[in-house]
Length: 285
Ligand SMILES: C[S@@+](CC[C@H](N)C(=O)[O-])C[C@H]1O[C@@H](n2cnc3c(N)ncnc32)[C@H](O)[C@@H]1O
Picture 1 (tube, rainbow, N blue to C red):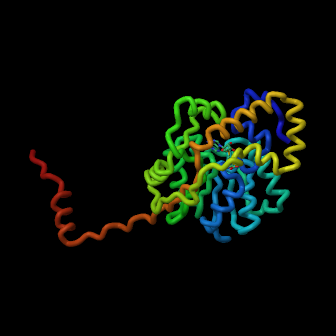
Picture 2 (picture 1 turned 60 degrees about the vertical axis):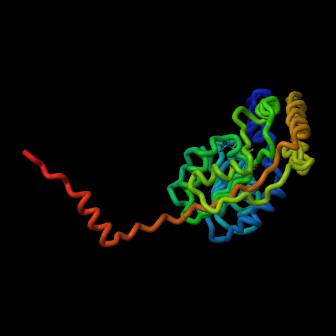
Picture 3 (picture 1 turned 90 degrees about the vertical axis):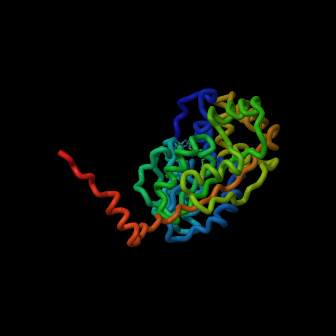
């Protein structure tokens, strides 16, 4: 059971969604996840990482439908607590493992996973560092698939400020082209944006998720009663997205880690050149 230690106004965006227990807090919600999983084509024998897994909805769905092994990590221990409960309830604890960890320092060896999934986490963080970590833990030929918010046009300064007020300082969606470049710079190949789309009218993730789930709605009533600032906070985020929807889209930033390049074979000429240039200079007394 998650303790309520903070007032709503003191919670950052991540703490708020963890406390509310939102399952799919990314653009496009769970339908976008399903659409993306179709193009990623995960196989049962593959080993996956869900980086910034939240309450584990995607990870448990994959375990249930594909039967693959998957580890979800999240920096927020409340999310991990919820994710573990979900895995237990859905009978997939033997396939899914959830751990509290920081995506900047993933507690895994190099070349470990076949697929790294992420949904709405990189947008809040340092893209270069995150993608370097994804690259490190992926096996050669492994795929990265990151569902993120994208900018369709430049954000006016005032809109950027409001966005940061709603989602946290440093929230920084890139254009589709910039997202692709960030992945390529980390060393990924065959980079493309899959399923790019504009935000639709119904894209207020938090409210949509709440509406779908009766348990969440019931719980929300208690929370609203205890914390009257919750409703204005949710309304503020919802009305920001409604007003500024035309700036935003989302898509799956997708790429593959290349195989290590084979060692270069030396020809006779290279060998002679090496011998000549590597020869230590004579010492003169
Ligand atoms: C917007 S939520 C998305 C959660 C989940 N992927 C989903 O789509 O529902 C972002 C998640 O990233 C986690 N997060 C933020 N910074 C992190 C970090 N440095 N390392 C790991 N997780 C982080 C937050 O705790 C939060 O659960």
